[in-house]
Amino acid sequence: MIIDKQTVHKVADLARIAIKDNEVDTLTVEMNKILTFMEKLNELDTTGVKPLVYMNEEVNVWREDVVKQEISVSEGLKNAAKHNESFFFVPKIIEK
Image 1 (cartoon, helix red, strand yellow):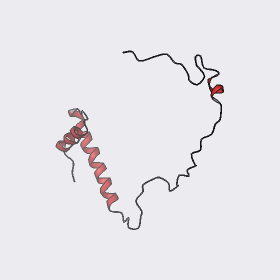
Image 2 (cartoon, one colour; image 1 turned 60 degrees about the vertical axis):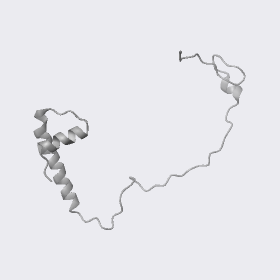
Image 3 (cartoon, helix red, strand yellow; image 1 turned 90 degrees about the horizontal axis):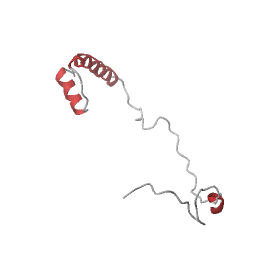
Image 4 (cartoon, one colour; image 1 turned 180 degrees about the horizontal axis):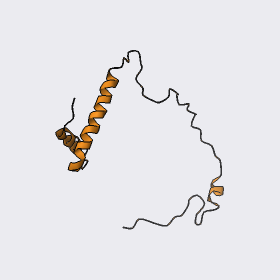
């Protein structure tokens, strides 16, 4: 496949990228280089090669989700500027 100026404009339009007229020639050459490289890669024999989904095959080790009471409510509230027995008081930031 050969990329021409019309294809460059079409790809830029699909990608919503504004390109200048003086950039089209450079982009045509660069896109043709990319396609030539991809054609070279397609020549490789990849039979028996598993598709790569992740960079490594490590499996996540999940821990059980256990609730722990690390600090008490009173300890959590002791440094709050304004609070009652159970909650922080914060200034209202949304105005109607």
